[in-house]
Length: 252
Image 1 (spheres, rainbow, N blue to C red):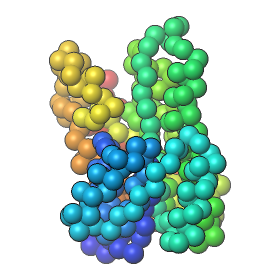
Image 2: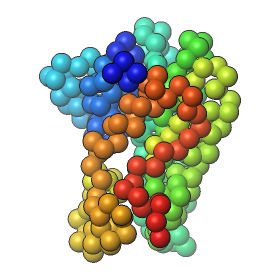
Image 3: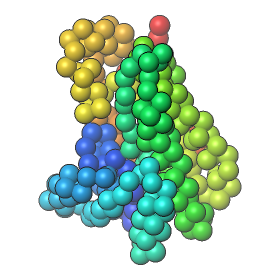
């Protein structure tokens, strides 16, 4: 369907070597986009890219640290000088668990740099080119923890709340320039970030009872909303956080 067709578009996906980032990159590629994969680990990045190339997709790679503002600017500017970036998915993120009263300051700062600062760094760098182009799509990856908290992850919850409000701010500042800035808030998905929880039978039992859908999410189930937000179908959608969570935020 043409409304969702991404042919001729180029999408930069951060944290794209595995998990949600890899799934979203594949989904956008299958919708017709050229995808630019980002991660710090060049070896894993090349493996992910080769998998997409083997499937017949157009793929480039950009290995840079999203928490290094200068490296981000250099990489994004360098690529944009050769090919316009039409879509950005700010997916890079991390988790660190611990009691809030004992949470290490360094761990807190590292988590915020990875989850919040990076979205600003890459978002700003890409937006400057999108503004000049007169169009662009920015999709930030939030979380069910944007709306809900659980013991032991208060800083993570704070970081994802910040992402939702950063998304609103991006939309407020940049919509007038033709940019659409939205967020996707995944619920509990089977990903490397959640490996410790997936391996915990007690947590899975709790999750299946707490989630109306009664199960973990599959990363492929995030692709539809990502394609929607990347396409012409979402032309008047801006500043929104869309929860893809099996209904967990809709129920008590």
